[in-house]
Image (cartoon, rainbow, N blue to C red; front, top):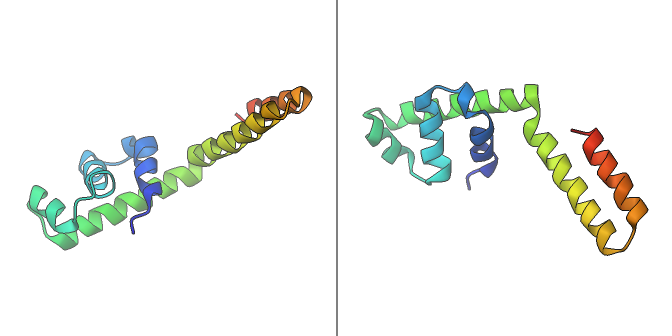
Length: 106
């Protein structure tokens, strides 16, 4: 099973890749094309397509490690879930505190 994280990272950091790597990763993760199909599109071997995708994945994970946007978005999401629960429970003070935490983390 493909890790959908790479597709998200490609949306966030795809500008750090070559256009070809970005497109290959999009084809593989977003459009669920096989390595053989991608290789056929680019006139390369299946192994070359695999290598380009793996190299792009590595670069995307390195960008996330340095910048942390995806981790920050996950933290905001968790905070918003907590905020929603506090609001549903009528805890205005708690909601205010959670909102302040979310904003402080940005």
